[in-house]
Length: 62
Image (cartoon, rainbow, N blue to C red):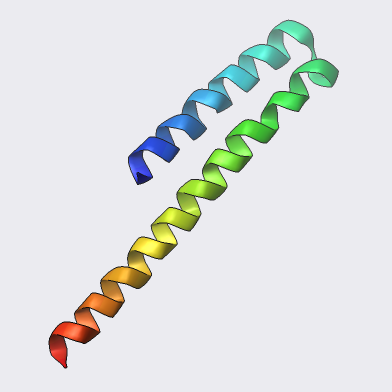
């Protein structure tokens, strides 16, 4: 899932830049919310994977 959210963040960032270039900052700036949300989901997923791996490592050692 991490790769999916990273790809969505990159794709929507490119779409937001294109939208700002075509429609200007005022209209295209609204599209910046999509890559922000996708990047937040990527970061949360990455953090959760790290926590789950740490829990698994502790369980294996015990």
